[in-house]
Length: 448
Image (spheres, rainbow, N blue to C red):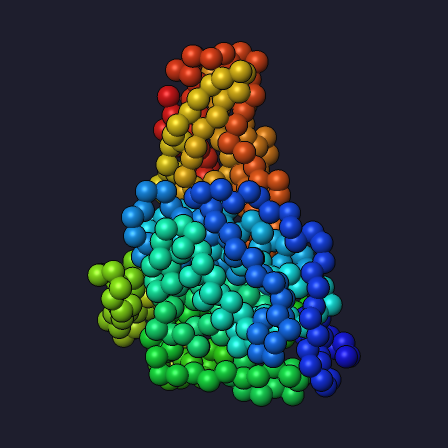
């Protein structure tokens, strides 16, 4: 075997012979508990050619009370041991759960047990066994959760880095199943690239052209900064975008103006974009086909600029411009590519199910779909007595109740909705209020 540094991504190229069984490296077993509404399956690595060479875990969250699921939102981490570990908490992300619940969808997060030095292509190319393992996981998780429809419902795919390669590859392989795909800092190859030996190109079937796809590189990944470690991401995005768009594909580009390979604030556009695509694409009848996007609603946008216009009013070359589903998303897109400050004028949902016992206040809350959750403010008899957390954290973007890791997943241990207060005694819950605060500073009405 020989190691090659390919545009900032460490790959392991197998020179000849069979691919060896690759063992996990700890700690891939440090999961949050998977009690309903969470479910988990794990499959061992295979030694068979064409099957997945890494062990993989699939954790899914099913919105309580949903009788029949309409789809699955998939949050796929990137390459390397650190990113793979971050996949352990993807299904526990409250903001992504809000997106899934809004459409009666489950939230699924894979976590591959990839050793740091192993070739990421062994899982991020779905043809190397990860597609088959994913499909198997949907069947088994359907049996566990009592939602057998998981094996047949559509997917909304999000992927970072190698996960973007995987999500794009799954879109190319199964376009009839994909409602939309968001590719953060990673795309599949469509042509043989001598700089990337051993990576097989994909083909674009006609059915792919009707699937909404968004490419989301950081500006330092080759757009405005040419010597960044990940500067090859932008050329790869152009090589993917161009052929798909020239054939009329529903593909756009949203350049993050602040970042390199880290995810930054992308979720504030990604979730809104996926929300709109799911609203417009999910079948009207259970088991029916995905609906087509309305061509007359489309807007176009400069792929490395900030200008947008309704499709018929765009002054540039339409096949060189990025596709957006409508004017509403175009306005959000423009805010994001300018400074990532995607606006929100609606307050978050108020917390529910508050209880007070033994000096501790507990509650349950749903994240604001538009802006997520930053923190909770606790009042006692109308006076603020604390905040959870005291200071929202996230070194990659806006501060959050759930601090984020590199691949856009909550840090462990997961933040809990509870507050210790010495004045609290059993039976005086009416003296307390818990107020949700989203990431643009808007507050809920509070829970009495």
